Length: 438
Image (tube, rainbow, N blue to C red):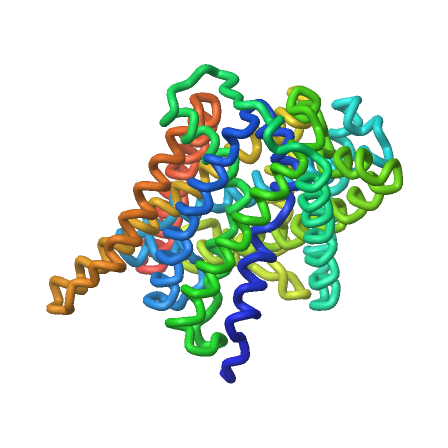
């Protein structure tokens, strides 16, 4: 394959994937913490650098589909690999639900009732999930030009509000908040857990090395510069909104950037930002839905998931996998929508981030295990790679601490179900082998 992706193309991919729906809702979630939210962005951005570099190293070592799933399976075997893939699948359909909630929050700028009436909000959320599930089942894919437009539209309101907030607002007025009166380490862990949602997806940018010019240099550089760029955008955007809207009011906002725009430009600014946010979120939901359907297929191809998930329809799409994933996203919406829009968004991003951080931790352990194998085979010890993997592992485990008991309970139950599915599939495969032998 001719190598065509240089540094700037790879950098754009990193930034484009990470800046999704999270930043459009996170100022409201972070409002109770006020100026202390900067600690979350700094620690999350720094930790993501370790994760990005670690995944980049693994992608060069094991150039196969599946990402953290295949890395863990190569290092530790079928069950750990399956549980990591299962966790990522949970993270993806949880992310679909969270993206839909963010969509409803900004759509409420045009139809306020969807944010005020939980039942109506849930109905709109379910409609969005099944519209995009249907689009993907039909095999419709976004064109490159459309993706470029949605990327530009997502960046426009961020820079517009960030710049205006810094110029017209007063950052020094943003109060220091510690709503649960926690110790500093626990507070930081909780903040990182919330802000990490905005960085989730970095695992998807470890592009195939055979399509990147000088991949050993380009991929780590693009991941590093892209993560730093994204962190800076998040910092100034969050503080721009907080400088314009009192945190007590911001905490209940379902469309914080649109509310900030209405202060600067009046009603029309609110609608302009809402259009940009909705367009951006729609583009990200479409991509997440497709990935959510593809991951179980990768596991099923290795005969670790029911075979039906591996089958493609006439359009070359895993329709069954997409439909099951859509059903799970829908169940999550229905179960939690009574909490209110901002509260359900916070729960969903915590669950999705938890089930992504566990695969990050497993990938770091896989990296360390594979490096140990290299050393045992007589290869030279690479202290830099060991340090990066260890840093990614420590950061992942530290962030998991901030999950909280409710989300941890959800995660444990879902992983336990995953283990049961694994042994059920294995049993069925073993039964088929015995039947063939007979």
